[in-house]
Image (tube, rainbow, N blue to C red; front, side, top):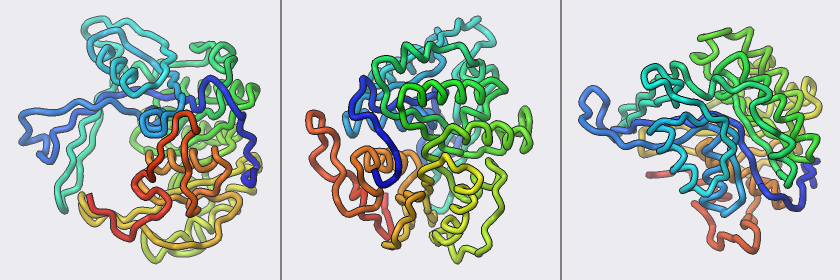
Amino acid sequence: MSKGLSILPKGALDFLSLGALVHRLDPGIVPFRKATECRIHVSGGEFNCAANLSDCFRLNTGIATALVEYPIGDLIAERVRAMGVKPFYKKFKHDGVRGPNHATVYSDQGHGVRAPVVFYNRCNEAGSLLKPGDFNWKEIFGPGVRWFHSGGIFASLSETTGPLIIEAMKAAKAAGAVTSFDLNFRQKLWDIWGGQAKALSVMKGIAEHVDVLVGNEEDLQKGLGLKGPDVTAKSKLDPSVFFGMIDSVVKNYPKVKVVATTLREVHSTNAVATPVFRRKQSDRLAAQLNSPPLTWMLQWVALRNGMTPGSRRWTSAPRDRKSSAPFLGMFKPLLMVLF
């Protein structure tokens, strides 16, 4: 392939993620201080990729994660099944009082110019208890896994999750899978147990095993300690800042074959601007412009089919499980996306 990625032609799983599963409480456009009811959504930065690749493109996907045996865990397991994702669980017993727990994310949708408000309760989170040795990677990768993915949110949960990601990536490489990592730097999560220094140590160790790296310029600076751009962005939609940092990634992490990012500028909760440009893309850059989980799905499907993300050709799923219609105009970004 033009990107230097060697993707297995077939396997039991097209895509496997490693990360934590959370449940999100959503009062809609009503702020929590005035809310009287909430909807419950199951998500996770790494799980979302597997879930949407399965649900939208009918790919065979899996998730390696923690599951707590209590009613919230039952709810989460049901949603994983509903999305068609194959689970590989490390199970934990709940003590009836303190946990372990699945993290709760409180997130209203905002409205108009009022931005969404997001906060967490990740106390005694089961995902943070995961450690090397918890999964039988030979058994998981044995039937064939084409692509393995994890992310910076999971890496930030505890001192053991970073080493677990590295263990999994080594096993993925040995099994012939492509490896990817979304830096997804979250200062608040790292500050709980190690701060910036620990983040750099963990993320740099993971990056040594990555084929496809996802993140923006802030992620690259804070997560990998790379020098900031020499150019000043004219706007949040200006790609020049990110283009300027690619050389630093290549120099410091020569094993990385593809670098991906997203560009967005939010005007309100129902109007998001994305740029329209046809600049020739670097062999180490795949810049598709949409929301992060969707972006990653589309980039992966494009690369999987031997295409450059952003090309005008439609990327379809495998013939026996295909999506025949273009999805949200995925390779024709609009100047203004209205929801």
